[in-house]
Image (cartoon, rainbow, N blue to C red; front, side, top):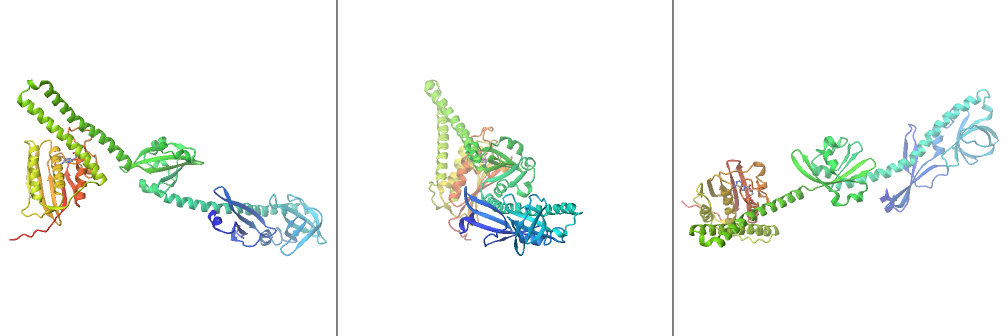
Length: 532
Ligand code: ADP
């Protein structure tokens, strides 16, 4: 309605209300000036605190009354009309009251109109109105004996008509108001349907009264299953959550992001983290929430990373420090073999530190997109043989490293250095996560337009639910190093990003406790034709 006023030339909308025989009312637009003897209600419409127009509803009393009762409540010689000041307004004509006074509140009085004596009963139409509804009966037809009783009965019927008119009259602004508020409500509903934040309303009795589409999308809980249900019974863990969520008394107070509470919601085994605030409303609390699951996970990973890196740094640093001190303090007392062992330890641990720094740097480059990857044809067989040979040097006696290569293999299109890095990483993991040793196989083969590299071990394996997540940055199955196997959680992330940058893909298949098989595939550079 506000918009209609803002965009419309007129600042007044007039509606005419016609009472129906069934007691209902019909509204229609009225474009002419208001009739003189109308019962009128006006409602101002405001927008941003400014009055932009008025909605006017009127009841045309003489016609309405004429339709309701043409002959008065009891028929016979009674007449029904309206008195405006000292004029009697009928459906046909207007007459002056020549003598006598109309008494208020339905008290009968005697008046003379157009040379005729009448007994009249009048009622005010509204407190500010000069209009009165009147019933007249000619003086001659008044039976003196039944007089008092008849007028009392007539007063009652009269009160009934008046109640009806008064109802219509008082209803008119509420019809206008309902229209305005319905449009406002529809607009609010549209806004609520399109905001990205979940919004819901819990009334004083703890019953959910509104659950917007964003709330459905974030939680997966449907509005029709929740609305008009107790929040404690439908929102998992609501009682504990409600106790933690800050509730502001004004919307502005809740704007402060620091006042929002981050709470977990367990929806059928899926954990959703919500940042949620509440604002009191007259008859309940409106809650607004945002999905912060991703941010929360990143935050968890970040703190996990700090813990992992600190651990990864501490171990080699302690070894380096110890070996260097021993060599410094007691070099002359040490045998040649011990000196070589210590130097060997320094070499291994400083390599470990250098590798860690390299991993962190590489991750930064991959994240920023600044890593250069070349694409050239290279020989997969050669790469696999040399990777296996290098791994044998690092593996202990319990581990065997086998290679499986078909007779004919096409060249791969990719970066040979980066492919070697991926393969080395996977073989190192296979050794690392096979504490009991076992067989590790490096296999390569062509499949469609791709060359597949597989590293298969008989080690710890990976639970099904974790097989995707291990490729995430910083993700480790054993973040606290309980198994005593170190690592930054960056290796597989780097592998995945490198393979992707060479237009390939990587995945794992595993039987927990029986081993894992990591496979990555890269596009082939050329087709080979096998001659007989
Ligand atoms: P890390 O530096 O911890 O080895 P990675 O990104 O290389 O990091 O591996 C992520 C996690 O995946 C490891 O912490 C480990 O739990 C698991 N993982 C990787 N390779 C294997 C494997 N061959 N067998 C079992 N688990 C593995």
